[in-house]
Amino acid sequence: MRKENRNSEGECYQVNSTISAFYNDSKKILEKITFNDFEVEDNQLFTLGIQGFHYNNCDLYLNISDANLQKNGRSKVVTTSAQQVLEEYLRNNQNISSKVEGRLNYLS
Image 1 (cartoon, helix red, strand yellow):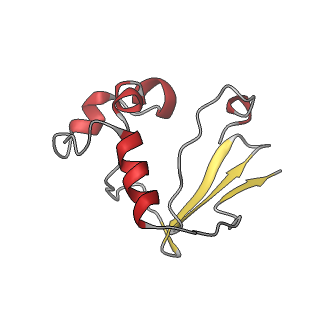
Image 2 (cartoon, rainbow, N blue to C red; image 1 turned 60 degrees about the horizontal axis):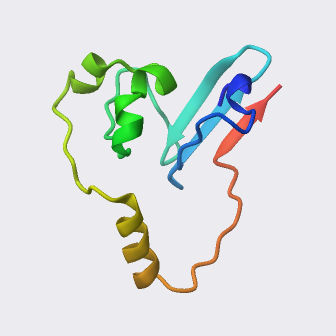
């Protein structure tokens, strides 16, 4: 959510509807993340679902080292093609409507 990542070249990840994030531009910090309306604590563990490219570049893009990713369990491949997953989902979920929900919030 950093300002320097909002230049049309930065990374942007899908954010689940149960997540809200609050980034303070003037302080340059992520102030708060909530999951199911509860504030996420630093010591909590979560499972990430990301493509291989992003996993291989977590240190660069997310500032999470490989050692940190592997600390609480090994990674697992669940699919080799994100396109096939999307096609299957869209095939089985016709006529979905979308709306902006305010999951990512930028504070000044």
